[in-house]
Amino acid sequence: MDNEIIAQIGEMGGLFNLSKITLILLGLLVLVMVNKGVRDLSQRLMDKLPSRRFMILQLATLFSFVWYIGGVFSLFAGVIQPPKELLLATGGSMAVAIGIALKDVVASIIAGVILLFDRPFQVGDRVSFGDTYGEIVSIGLRSVRLNTLDDNLVTIPNARFITETVASGNAGALDMMVVTDFYLALDEDLEKAREIVFNVIVTSRFAYLRKDVTFAIEEVAVAERLAIRLRAKAYVLDVRYEKAFQSDIVVRVSKLFREQGIRRPRRDLSSDEALV
Image (cartoon, rainbow, N blue to C red; front, side):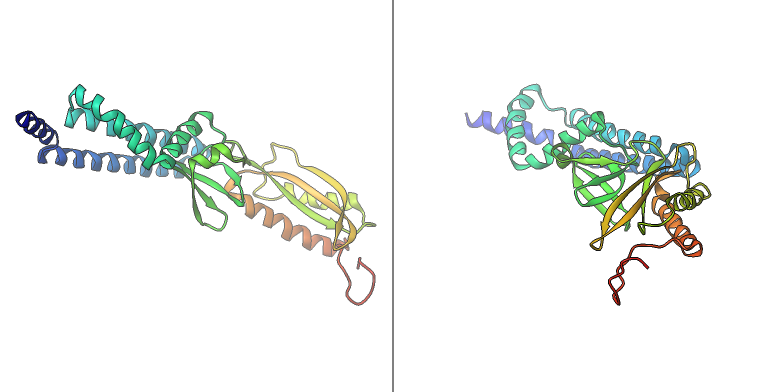
């Protein structure tokens, strides 16, 4: 019996000798370096082909999934070459142990695969998730990375996207609708105000004019007073210019409203008049 145990230990030691460990480490290094090279290449391609940015990002993400999963499996099977009996004996127990210890990580990895095929959003999309809004920059095995408009990189576990609501602003398209609200006094000339806003939008260098500019007008309460909300819905030509587009509209419309005498609703602290 002791001889059998010693023989089994020797066999196990042969599976993990120094040369095989060195090969595995070198293989992992190659996996990382190749993936980094592909990422750098995709970044250069996106700089040269900005209109294909989303497609390039998605292909790079898919490559990372397949490369790492296939590479790790190939290293394990090709270098260590474990016997079939060992795989069967240790596979089940390791799966249970890893599942218990890393259940959240495993759930996120499975969710990542689901996200890859179900595609509720894509790399490059502008999404709202809870209180976080920004652009999806990567979809990894464990988490999604989102770059906010304040240039903060937020990492969200994949599993959360399976159970919680996420809204995509452009759903894979390069252009996206941008909604901008303007508030007017009740007795203002709405046609004139709408014409000013329309002309500003169509002359903006960020506007995507292949899609219509639309408006929604309604009465709302502002500072406990009724006012008119003029909501402009227009498309920006690239989601990266979202805030630049909105800022351009607001600045130029505000200037023209002042020049044309279009009044805004506000509370006058010196009287009961709400509109000045």
